[in-house]
Image 1 (spheres, rainbow, N blue to C red):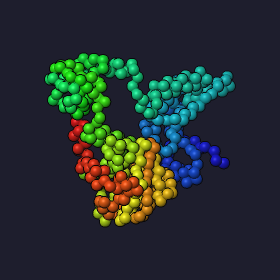
Image 2: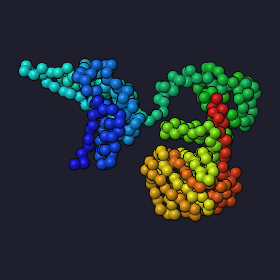
Image 3: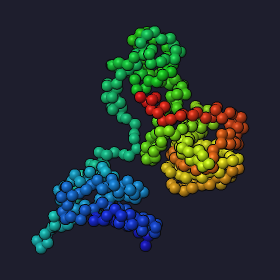
Image 4: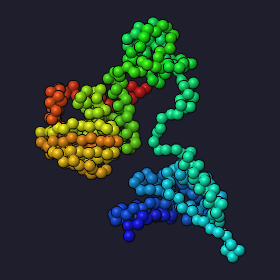
Length: 372
C-alpha cells in the first residue's frame, strides 16, 4: 500500500531487528524504528534510552523514535530521548471515567500537554545540528578571557613575524590579534614598538604554504572522523593542486596512498565545492566507490551521480573528471599506480611537472606536530 511503517523494537534481539530492517529495505518500504520497552509502566532503570544511540549507529539511514510507557509524570525521559537523537514519539493517552480507571502508563490531557511542552524545551535546548557562528554576546564574553599578541621587540612594517618576535598576554584590547588567530609568517601592517598590541589586520596576510596545508588537513581529518574512516599512520598523503596551492579549494583533491603493488588502493577526499579536472590514464584501470558525501563523475562525456556504495569503472584511455557539492570521500581500487600516467585536457596543467601540482605529506604525524 506504500504507506510509511512505524516499527516497535520492544523485546527484540539485535539479530531480529537486523532481519526486520533487511526485510523492510528489500521491499523499498519507508519505515522508522521505535525504541520501546514493553513494561507497563516502565521504571527509570528499565528505560534503556542508550539503545536509541545503538539503533542510530547501526541504522544511520533509518529514522529512530521512542515509544514510551514510563510514568505519565516523568517528563525527563522524552527530553533525554530527544537529546539522544529520537525524532518520533508515541505516547498512550486516556480519559478516566467512573467506569474505567486510567492505567498507570497512559497520560491524562493535562499530562500530555506538559509532555509536549517538555519536548519543545528539549528541542530548544539542543539547538540545530549544524555548528553556527558564535553570537556577538558569546564572542564578547570569550574575548575577555583571551590572550592578545604583543610585540616583543621593535618591528618594522612589512616584516614577516615569527613566534620569537611576539608574546601572548592579557588583557586583549579591541582590534588586537588573539593568540588563537596567530600563525608564523604574518606580515606587520605598521611599525611596532616593544610591548605594543599587534593589530588584528595582520591576520589578513596571504597565508604561507605551511598554513594553507595545515588548515586543509584539519578539515580533511574532520571529514574522516565524521565518516568514521580510519587511516593508517603510515599512509602517505598527496595534495593535488592543479592550478596551485592557493586555488586548491577550487581544484584538487587529497589522496591517501594506502597500497601500491600489482594492485593499488587509495582514498580520495574532496572538500566542498571542489573539482578535479578532465584527464585520463594510459596504463591504469581504476574503480571508484563512494564511501561518504556526494559525488558527480563525468566519464567520456557521460555524467554519473553514484549513491553511497556504488562503483564506477574507469578504463585506460577514458576521459574523466569529478566534483562534489558538500564534500566526498571515495575509494579508488586500481592496477598499479605509475607517476606521470595522468594526462590532462588543460595544457596549463599538462605543461606543469608533477612536483609543481603535487605536495607530498609523508605521514599523519607531520600534521599532528603542527597542531601541537
